[in-house]
Image (cartoon, rainbow, N blue to C red; front, side, top):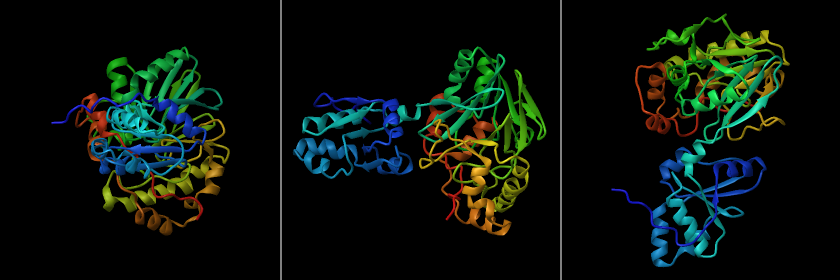
Length: 393
């Protein structure tokens, strides 16, 4: 039976998830001491270009307090600046931060731990003709969602269940009512908020028609491959972008393409999460056609707003994760490969699949259910919806 950690031996400062993100945004060096188990650390942790992260199990610090050997552990933590101690919920890390302070080290505790980090959700405005467009960023996983507001109405695209209340509140802040909740495809990395918004707020749920064909067990509005949704004075036009999945459908809002999981800023989608390894080559060919044919009809000035970003992805000057299609055509080697080379490269270097992806797909289809706590736990970790990086070698 697990027990509560002992009280910290000294007062120590705490750092909120918001404060930590601000330090990362400023490019400051961040020295992380993660005291979770090794497998938890390896699967998912605070990371970034300026982060030095070290894992040491909590029990070692309990033992070090008894044996008066805290210095031996602390001096072995690489990096610069104060030590930010991290655990799952900010409880055990509070003890370790206090122990380090008690022994003369500059340390602070990440308040609420990795759970608090996972609940951090930031909104940034994307420049868009004819509508207000907000990009939601979840730093813990790189998930991106979008709120489209026009003339008193709003739609949220790729909403996360954990933040359903946020979308309704933000629409109201823009003097709009949330009319639609749209998924670009059946997600494998996070639990969708489409049904939560429909059940609790009466928002109309919308899925691509091909997503419904995958066996959806509820009754959303079906968006045809050439369909559109009217939101106030603007229109969300469907743009079929299969390859990641058979149902992947982007949405064009004025001069912005909400690309979902098709094209990212430093890679393209992986093709194996719907049909496994055996079906990956066929979907990779679909993805090649999406890049070379379907997207060819769009101008180079079209702003691409993807469904995910990686920890190494640099934001634009307005702090959004966006880039013009022309920039991505120049940046990504995927646009210069022939079909055979593209399929070989995509299928030959597929990253690990998202944690719990099969159950998350089932929950998003409606064939399985999960309470809020279980759903939140299932989606913790990196999204892993992209193929290996496809930038210029």
